Amino acid sequence: MAEQERNLRKDRDQLVAERNRLFHMFLENPLEIRLASEIKVIDDQVAEYNERIRAEDRNAGLHERKPPGFTKVSSRIERPLLQKANSR
Image 1 (tube, helix red, strand yellow):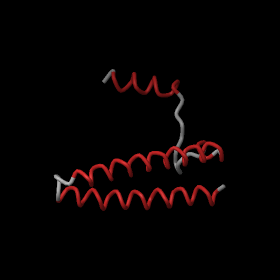
Image 2 (tube, helix red, strand yellow):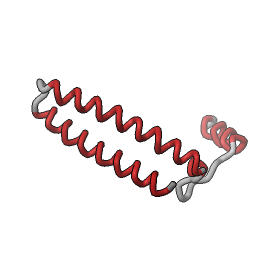
Image 3 (tube, rainbow, N blue to C red):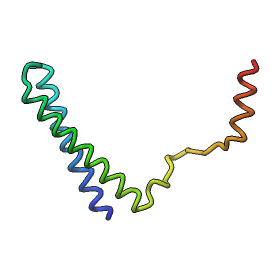
């Protein structure tokens, strides 16, 4: 499954690189509507890849993983801190 996710990410990254190349061409020639339509198609494909990657992450349980140094602060702690800060 990790191999499949790696392939999805690699394919998505290639699409993003192609999209960026076309976008720079479009910036130089804004009247090239063909470029705009190609960019739109690639944006849609990138969105599909992102959905598939998120689904793979959920299936693998990776959505539970937190970034290093991440700590969840409970709302009971946040409220008094916010009240104290607002009272100043």
